Amino acid sequence: MDDQQTFFEGFQRGWESVVGPALPPPEIDVPDAQPSGSRFMQGLIMGIEAGKRKIKELS
Image (cartoon, rainbow, N blue to C red; front, top):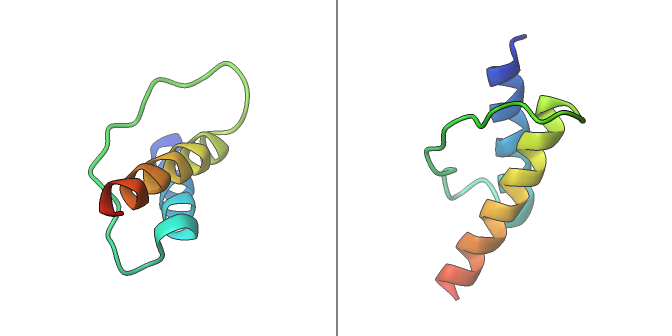
């Protein structure tokens, strides 16, 4: 599995943990790798943050 795919899997899981599976995740670009942590965890954290922003936007 490549880093990009791993990042997107993490992002989707984080997104769905906040907004659920009904709303599709937004189109995003994979950011540059961070010096620590896995690409999956980076995606997960960014997905959670994006989901929280979306919920706030919809409220």
